[in-house]
Structures are given as C-alpha cells and as structure tokens.
Amino acid sequence: MSRPCISPQLRQVVAARSDYRCAYCLTDEQIIGGFFTIDHIIPLFLGGITTPENLCLACWDCNLIKSARIAALDPNTGLMTPLFHPYKQDWDDHFVWQAEGLLILGSTPVGRATVNSLKLNRPPLVKARHYWIRAGWHPPDKSENIV
Image (cartoon, rainbow, N blue to C red; front, top):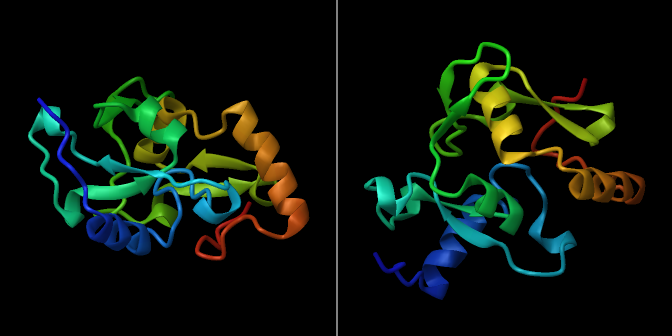
C-alpha cells in the first residue's frame, strides 16, 4: 500500500490543530529545529484514512515507535489497552508531568500503555526537556497538570 500524499495545506491544518506540538509527547516543533511528521492515528494498514480527523502532528521518534499500533499492554495490569487518541481524548485526562515537566507519567491505563509503548521518557528526550525547562520553554502551557 502506498502512502498518500499529504498536501502542504493539509499538513498546515493538522499542525495548527496540534498547536505545532507532538500529539503524544507534547514536544514543540519550534524548539526542535525541524519539521515533525504527520501520523495516521488509525494506521492505513488497519483501515485508517487520510483525513484531518485521523491525522496528528508527531515527532519523528513517537511516530516511528508507534508504527502501526493502536493498542499496547498497560504495564500495571498486563491488559491490552488502546493507545491515546489525540482527538477523542484529552491529554490531561491520561498523563501528568512529574519533576516540573521532566517526565510524563500515565495516570490511566491508556496513559500508562502510551507512555510505556511510545517511550515518552526516552533518555535523549528527557535530557532535552531538562534544557527546555531551564530555558522556560517547557512544559507546555496547555498542560498545567504537574505533580
């Protein structure tokens, strides 16, 4: 199956809808120095379609790690759990920032499965967050949920 072409106009709609942040780890595209990719929330392989409702902005690592998955194991229960859906669920309902924004913790089975399977606290990202916090660029204002 060939990947559909995402027009610059559709990319702009999706990026603006995500506030130019990765829909999963909330990294800001502007502080990376490059463009993020567009993720099919429900992958084409599983019947997803290329519409704004099924597309979100994602950093390259979150997108590559997520791959074609829509579910993963909740590390606390061992049960298969749907991954976070950026447009059907609110980020703050499933995740909290810990240590002033250094780490993302899952507060629900969906959050825990997503944090664990997408490796939202991968070491290079945590190291970068440390510097972003010091610069006052992180955590995003969108998420006031810090523990």
